[in-house]
Image (cartoon, rainbow, N blue to C red; front, side, top):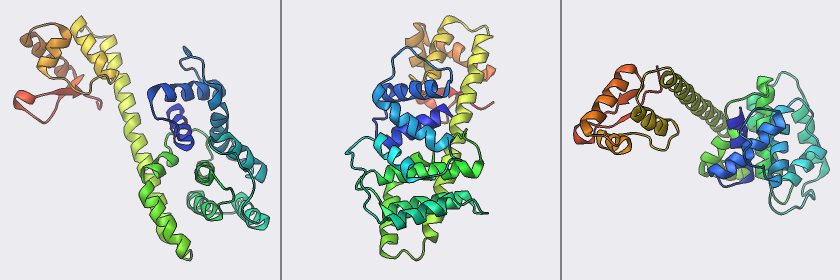
Length: 284
């Protein structure tokens, strides 16, 4: 959940996706939700409103969407601050009334339509895209009736931005048929879930390997190289690279590697010969 919320804040605010920036956001989210996290650096106050807005959309999903809430979200996003409405109040009120109706609607489909409708309304001079993403996240949270979600639809929409703009422009010309938009949105959601599943499987695999190394009888060389792989300093290792890191002969390096392959910590990659390399065996 912490990783996903960090993705959402970084994506929606257009922050640099670098480790230092992500760490600042992650610390703020952890503090806001009272989750244990690294606190060795003070969090930047400039990100506080961004975090509060993202948490508001995803964790307080049951609260009604209102003009006041939209204005708060708008004010929290970086960029030019111009909260004046561009559309008639009746158009925006119609959207808000529709969004807040419970009924028997499929909230995932409603998320796709809500994002599109808000973009077509474009009630603000700026930041409509960012707010439309928040609205979609809020609707998806309503579909699951849960604030703890491990995938980010906002990140996936941004990843497919060229298709996004193409579909949006086409609907602006002919807004009668939005079937293609809904199908594309649902496909993005499926990709987001698949990506999250792969990422969390890898995290669980790394946790399993850390446990194996902690309770095993590996030597200092093996621990040193495996830690580099676990910390993703390197993604694979060859015999010569192992010998360099472990300050040992290549024969010793090969014995170290084969022992860990047999134990299920490492796996041999498909390429062979002089380029034979080994990676972490993340799936049991």
